[in-house]
Amino acid sequence: MAPSVVSTVVESGENTEAKNSIKIITAARQPLEYRGKLDEFNSFDVTPVIGREFPNAKLVDWLELQTLMNS
Image (cartoon, rainbow, N blue to C red; front, side, top):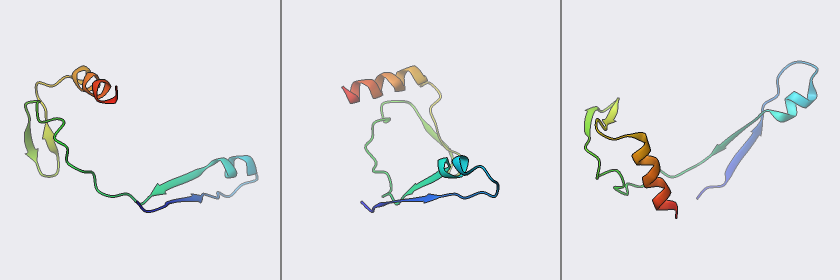
């Protein structure tokens, strides 16, 4: 993995504390890897731009799935 790049944003003004507290963190990352974790949910592709819709899935189901994967 490539190293992260951290740069400080400097704005005009006299408040140096605010200048030092504003940071943009960007990281060069690899594309996400397909793992098939959501294959169990009914889905269809709306359009290539909009992406995939999961009409019967509930957010609670996804959070429970994430909790199970992390334990």
